[in-house]
Length: 171
Image (tube, rainbow, N blue to C red; front, side):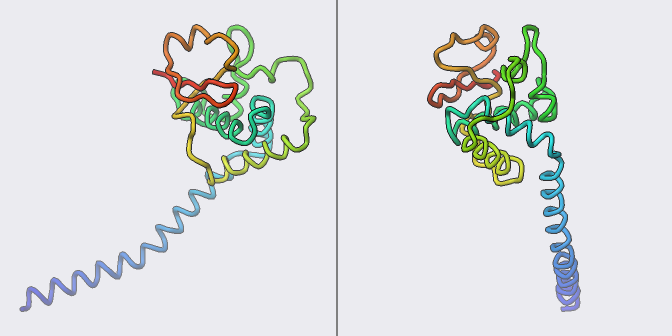
């Protein structure tokens, strides 16, 4: 009986400790989520939104979400840089990863409704309300009317097609 009484007392103490720690653990999780959401500064947010606008405005919200996932998937890949700015501004042997960044034209959005949509998608993707990844982990895409680039033919698998774009993940 004494052993049983000691066991119950021990369980009561453990439950009290767990109850005390639970709010602290939940608060830490909330703080971590808030920190992750604020790690992206205003300049990176604008660059991210500009990328969605220039690369996917013809594909609407779904296209912008898909392009956003390509950027985020690249950040998560060891094959690419680890920040929005570095991924979008990464050079290639023949120019730029994202054509709009080096085409010599103004980067200022001219279609207000699509620019607002790009900003809305940016907010949802960077503030923790991300929709699922429709691209299946894609790190690249190209327009459907263009030939598949040779570097994609050698080491990537098409995962998704949305209107005028094919998406690929590395093998």
